[in-house]
Image (cartoon, rainbow, N blue to C red):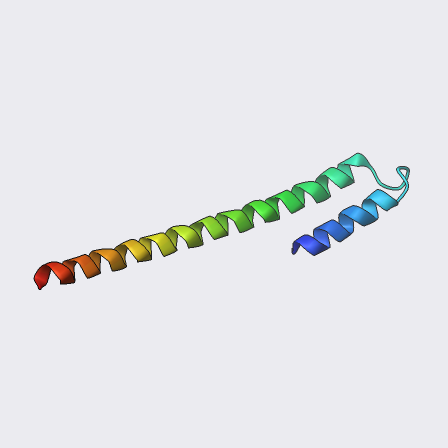
Length: 69
């Protein structure tokens, strides 16, 4: 689920009277949002790690070609 959907649910839940919505519901929405954010952060960290590894591999190839000259 996208952040916007989570935040929309959270704002709606906050607007609803406390009698209609429990703290557990709010906690569940915040927890889901936190999980999505954590998953996106992990995905981005993996992408950065992959890009760094590709850059290092390219650097090794370039240095190897320069040594052959």
